[in-house]
Length: 82
Figure 1 (cartoon, rainbow, N blue to C red):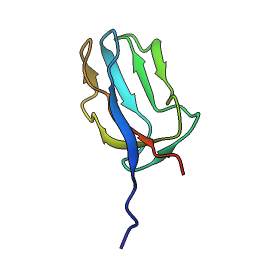
Figure 2 (cartoon, helix red, strand yellow; figure 1 turned 90 degrees about the vertical axis):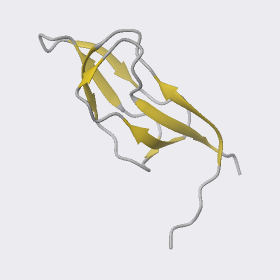
Figure 3 (cartoon, rainbow, N blue to C red; figure 1 turned 135 degrees about the horizontal axis):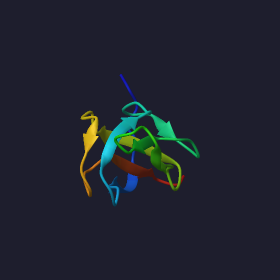
């Protein structure tokens, strides 16, 4: 059985523009300073890269490749400090 994980808080990452979305992390993956998502315009030019702010855990992710402005990309939990 897996050990429970406690988070201090959680939040969604929502971009300020739409485009073609590629989420490059898996669910329940511990994130540090790494690329987590890439948003491209319709011509394939990268318009945004997303990085986690602290030590975080991915709870939910968008699997639709078309993302609208303000559309949810990832739900991240900030891990509790020990």
